[in-house]
Image 1 (spheres, rainbow, N blue to C red):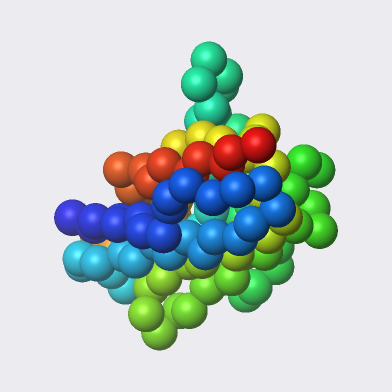
Image 2: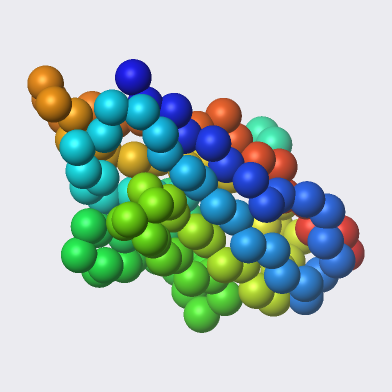
Length: 119
């Protein structure tokens, strides 16, 4: 089994910054693509950003230029640096990982971390 644990959420004022981390542990051979999703109250889950094992990134239009996704393959960890936060960024943020294990390839998600941006 694999466990993903997010951290770094909290309450911040408009224009502030937060850095989310997501560490994976378990029977991991390698980590393929990793991603951050979010779900705001009353809205569907949306992809915020993703990053391939080679470091290629992709962002939702709403966060381009403000958020940066990165990863540390040695630590099986993905990060999300969030700058210039806006109230509309308020959501529960979840990390997701495509994990190569000894017996197959599986998709895992974390439990989520709350990000709240006050106006």
